[in-house]
Structures are given as structure tokens and as C-alpha cells.
Length: 61
Image (cartoon, rainbow, N blue to C red; front, top):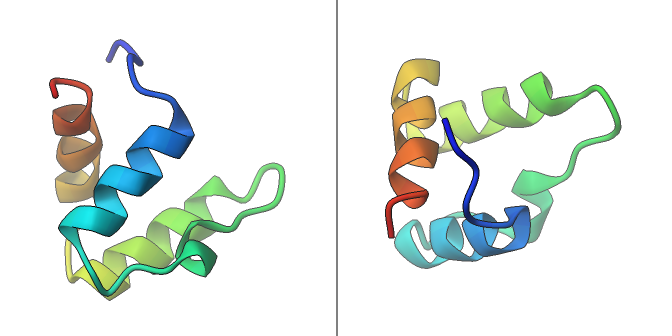
């Protein structure tokens, strides 16, 4: 996947699309990306594959 949008833009787009998301949902320490993705998966009730597709979709806007 080609990364076109910055992480800041992606977070803003997700927060706009899913009003239940807060800044803290995107917090992660170095090497802890999987924990953040797990939190997002639970909060949005989406599988990891669905999240990957969602992030890929954000690159097309």
C-alpha cells in the first residue's frame, strides 16, 4: 500500500467518520502499534482485515 496521507490526516479522517473515537484511542508507544490496532478493532467492532481495508481506503481520498 502506498502511504499518501500523514498519520495526523488519517486520525482526523477516522475521528470524523467514527465519532466514538478519541485521541487516546490512537496512542501507542514505539513498537506497540498492534495494541492500538486491537483497541480500534474492539471499539469499531471491526476485524483486523476490515481495519486494514479502512486504512487503505483513507489513502484514496
